[in-house]
Length: 211
Image 1: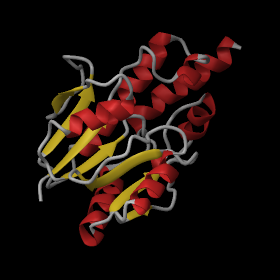
Image 2: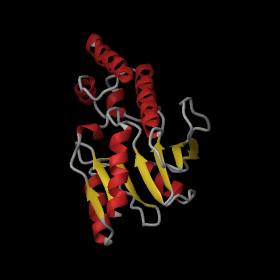
Image 3: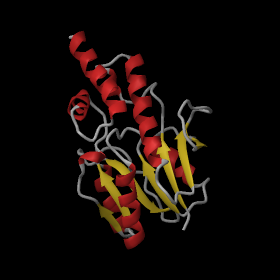
Image 4: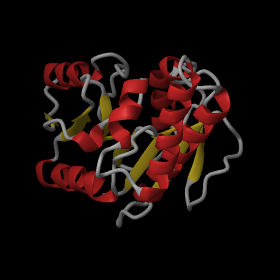
């Protein structure tokens, strides 16, 4: 069963509006790029993955690693993913959000292994009931529900269509970054890598000094 991981990367121009109110563009761009690079780095550690795609509107990326660029043809994330799924051939798809600073290869592998055992879609929820990771069969109809409360909406759609799905219990590794409060709390988390810790500290200090 062929497997692919898709990492949506929509850039930093219009993304993360709530963070942009606290940080200037330069430091925000650095933060999001370093977090995305870390996600790519962890994904590439996973064995048995046939393709790793970065879904983006950019024709070139500065990230390191052996991945393929998958052209983002949508106006918003749900359309982007739906169109991308029509272009790839792998049977098992894992979508991993790019803004997960605490995620590791082991967390993602646990989700993939759980899927292999149960053959049910597996979803990792964020703290606010969004979606950080979802693993599913590409041939299943995929709902356009990314956004607010998406983990609940995925579960409702899959169950309504008699498609097996398991929503994992929330794990702090699934935490994404949307607000300045997230940065403060993640900066002290023991799961945060040394490489990311310095940029998180810089962001927190930038906001405090700006006040």
